[in-house]
Structures are given as C-alpha cells and as structure tokens.
Amino acid sequence: MKATKLILLSLVLVALAVSSGFAAEKYVKKVDNFIILVDRSGSMDEKYVGTKDKKIVLAKSILERMNAMIPELGYNGGLSLAAYAKQIQALEPFAAASYGASIDKVPTVIGSNPTPLSEGLKALEPALQGASGRNAIIILSDGQENVGTDSLKTAAAMAEKYNVCFHTISFADTVDGNQKLLDDITALKPCGVGVSAAQLADDAAMKKFVKDVFYDDASDPCALDDDGDGVGNCVDKCPDTIKGLAVDSNGCPIPDVVRLMVNFDFDKYNVKPEYHQVLADFAAYMKKQQSFTVVEIAGHTDSVGSDAYNLKLSDRRAKSVRDYLVKNFGLDEKLFSSKGYGESKPIATNDTEAGRAQNRRIEAELKGVYKKK
Image (cartoon, rainbow, N blue to C red):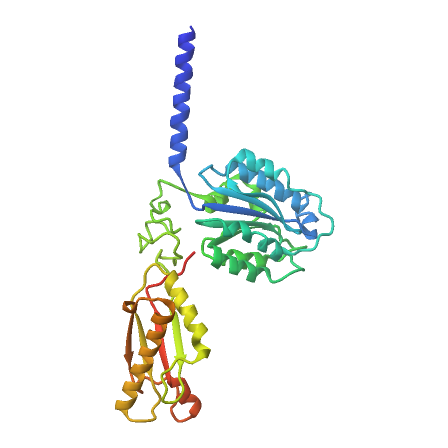
C-alpha cells in the first residue's frame, strides 16, 4: 500500500514538473525590470466617477489583481509611491507572494497631499541606474500635478537615458485628472501601453494589459528576440545587435555621430588654448568606444591667398590637430587620417571677416559609434 502511494506521489510530482516546464516555455518576457509607481496625491483620495470607491483604493485593488496574473519569468520588480516619494520594494527578483506582501503596504489613507508626480519619477533613478536590460515603469495616477517640475520632461529624459517603456493606468475622470499628460507619457516610446482603471475592471482586459506589458506568447514568431534588443525577430532588420546598444523600431543600432570643429587665426595652424578642452573631450569619447571607423580630420581655409598656398595651409591645420590628439592623449596615429581641402568647401561667406573666421577650421566626425541604452 505504501509503495502504491509512493508511486502515485512520484507521478504527481513528475506531472507538476512537466507542467511548470511547459509554463516556462509558453511565455517570453518583454522586460527585465519593472517598477510600479502609485500616485498618492490628494485627488487620488477622491471617489472615482461611476464607483463608490476612492481612486487609491481601486489602485491597490488593481495591483492585487495584476500581481496574480504576472507570470514569474525572472523579472526584477520594484514598487514605489509618489506624493510623497517613497520606495516600498527595491528592485528584486519578482515572486507573486513577496510582491503581494509589498502591495499590502500601500497606504490608502491620503488626506490633502500635493501632487509632485515628477519628484516621484526622479526618485526611481537610483534603481534604474543599477538595472540592466529593458525597463518598464507603470504609473497609476489621475495625471494631476501641481508641485515640482514638468512630469513629461522628466519621463522623457528617463525614457531616453534608461531605456524605459512607460505604461499608465489612468484614474483621470471628468472631475479630477489630466488624461493628456498620461497619454503623452505613454507615447514617449512605441512600447508604451495606456489603459483606464475602468477598463481594467474586466479580467480579460487586465490579462491583456499584463500580456502587453510583461510577456509574449512563445508560439508567436514575433515573441522571440534572439539579440535581446526589444524588437522581435520577425521585424528585426539587424538581428545580431551588440547588447547594450539603443535601437530603432527596426532593431537597428542608432548612430551617435560626434563632430569636432576647431577654428584658427588668419594664416595660422597652431591649436589655440580655447580648444584644448574640446579636444580633450573628443579624445576621451574616442577612448570609451569599442569600435569606430578611422577619423578623417579635414582642414579648410578662407579664400585669402592662392589656391596652392591655402591647400598646404589647410593640410597643416589638419595635421596639427591630429598631432595634438596623438601627443597629448596617447591615441594611436593610425586612428586618424588628415587631409587639406584648401578654400574649396566654405561653410560661410568669404566676403566678411566673420565668415572667413568660420571657414578657417578643421572638421572631424567619429563614425561607426552607436548610442547606448
């Protein structure tokens, strides 16, 4: 009898292991880290139009239902409050049970708190600075703001700097709220998803929101993202992107062309002190890059003097800057080419002193460099 029970127990355990394996294979995560930001401003203490509940109470209820639907795919999850900014859970491996315990700590008693939504966003930066991969911030708010700097500008800077997709759950209504602000934040990147609290009252809508934000179905060919750049294989036109590079909607790295311009006094080719810092910054940037094409330093002159003389002068200017970079910053001479173009490529009129001063220059571009996430 005992042997029979042991066999049955073993079969059950095997079945559970197989089913969990299938579950793990069924979904592909869209993000690596997410932070939910709950607005606790005074307007969130008002009743949500069409219900008997306060907005903050509904927000907490939505979080509890959402938490039960998020598959455990190896995310890091955080939870914070705005108005006033407070971290409830730091970014840590997501598990429904522990995250649910953090949701329990969201207070539903507010009072007359002001609305510094931008300050709540800024308070998330330390967590994002230590996060790698794809980031999502989910904002539960009615969009009201009356304290602090522009929330949209704050969110836009974070989206660019930390590769953040912003998603919003709106409690804006005909009494209190700024739906446009929430829409604008959501639209900062194509990956943003925006819904209303009323829509999420439906379980099917909640399930769709969770899927749109957190995961894809592995049976969908677009759900696979082999290079991890956030663009599915089926539309990725640059399928082997180096990790850590920012990409466009086609999955291709975004060029980060850095330009250098140095001007010279009349009939001179020595580097003036006012350009020493500019050249130091350019050299420092070069040293940080893993790869780039050879930098051509192009020399130019104004139209005063003969063509032959100006061609030689422009060549000296280009070589002067090249030698300065090599000598002062230890850069390999092979990284540069230099060429003089004389007076053949003016960028301003040669009829005035101001225009001629602009034409007495060198120009260089660091190409083959791409923006990072």
